[in-house]
Amino acid sequence: MLALEDLRVARGGRTLLQGIDARFAPGTFTALLGANGVGKSSLLAAMCGVLRPAAGRVLLDGCDVATLAARERAQRIALVEPTEPVLGAMTVEDAIAAARFPYHRWWEWQPTGADAAALAAALDATELTALRAREVGTLSAGERQRVWIAVALAQNARVIALDEPTTHLDLRFAVETLTLLRRLADAGAIVIAVLHMLEEAAAFADRVVVLGEERILADGAPAAACTPEVLRAAYGIAIDVDERDGELTFRRKTKRPAEESAGRDRPVGSD
Amino acid sequence: MPVAALVALAVGGTAIAPAALLTALLHPASHTDAATIVWSLRVPRIAIAATVGAALALAGTLLQALLRNPLIDPYITGVSSGAGAAIAIGVTAGVALAAIPALGFVAGLATAVLVAVLARRGSGLDPERLILAGVSISALMSALIALALTRMGHGNASEAIIAWLAGSLSGRGWPELAAAAPYALAGAALGIATIPALNVVRVGERRAATLGVDVVRLQWTVLAAAALLTAAAVALAGLLGFVGLIVPHLARRMMGTDLRVGVPAALLIGAALVIVADALSRALFAPLEIPLGVLLAFVGVPAFLYLYLRGAARAYA
Image 1 (cartoon, helix red, strand yellow):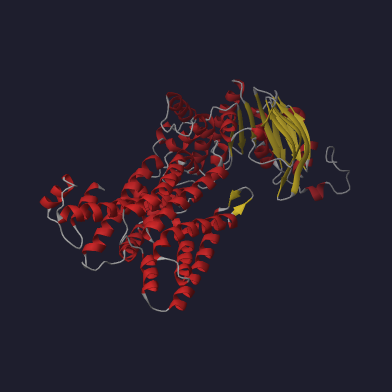
Image 2 (spheres, rainbow over the protein chains, first blue to last red):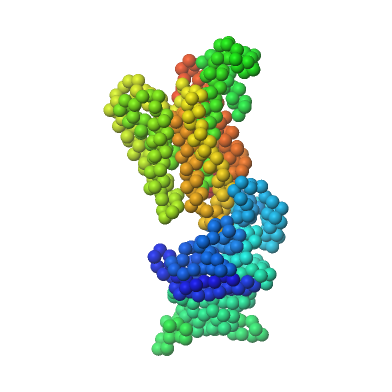
């Protein structure tokens, strides 16, 4: 169980989120939604122990994540963030093999059988086996994104947190990545992903947390959390929500909110 | 490297024929001229050249990998300029020439600590600040060296300083090596222990942190290792440019960016390069010796430009 207790997240001295209480159980896939700059990535980083919370605690199975040694944390929590520059001359295989670092003591330099198995499974799950000898710097943005997801898989961590994992991916790989994350959750992992596509969140996640200014606007099953009122409060635009045969579809209204809401009350959930 | 060492044994102020060299090597106790030259002059000098070359190559490789910047060389730590300034001032103040290496070593490490303190951000090091602090402090120390030389005028002392600044192994022997070796070995041990973590840093510093690398500890360990290695090299050979800059490039070009093979390659190339350069400096205009640093710069600058323009820097682009 991953638990956030009265968490306050700040960047550059500015509080983004505060009073955040949430629990994430094994076997769940949670989507974090919200407008740009609301603090989704920072919350994810704080959950993973990469960003120190301004206040409150993150507990993994009762253990404060901040007190874990770096290697111990990496064995339990994997974080996939948007791509940062990578050394051009590193192969896909080398990059994924780096995920096995936390399982080695400092004098153990050679890969073990478990490393080889984790590497092969990660390559297979992300369909990168054919590209294993390619240099990461020569890959497309989408292929590189799959490499970072493969790195997270090879970590064999119980918590897998992903910041916009489907960015740069084409439609097929986006769906396959989300299906893979769903499978990992079904196998007992705690999967938490920042997503921008509401349809993706509704179709694959079993829980949606919508973030607004400094707080959680809604937290629950997709149909309960993704209401027009909540989405309007989160994104500042009107979004229609339809549910048919248990499937949610979202349609953005073309009118600008200032024109549309003139003279009306503020929407539910925005205060 | 063994080939380089053999060549270096044979050449010098007095050329030694292969047969005489073999005899001298196999019979160290014999009192021939060749045995004396080989065992009391050339073997220690080759050992020192190998130590200096390997130390600078390792320091450069570690720092370039940590900072992911191909233009970093070990002198960014401030070790050389600090040592140079202390020696220039020390000689001006009348410190005995025999104390020069020790003075350089201590001052070099002290300057490295100063640069590290300036480069601190939070509990870790800021790569940009490290480069800025290293370059600024080096410029300040260079000004101190120039000032000391100006005040001293011409004479034996200033010539000694200039020779030291140009880099040379002249007159160094076993005692100097024995004094510097523990620091070089400590630096090498620290540095080599960081290789698995530095390999992970290839995927990016932030991502490495999520993969279990304690980045702050890694930064301080690499800086300490590089400072120890560079200080030992500076104490032995004065200021030798380019070894710590070019050898990591050569090693990466030959072996790729995996430091498990890159570091051994860099150690061997660095050692061989300085052994050969030192042999050339002794042999080219014997009995005159060209300062080793000058020779390395003449070879090093064109080699560096060639490599850089050919795209060797792509590895860290």
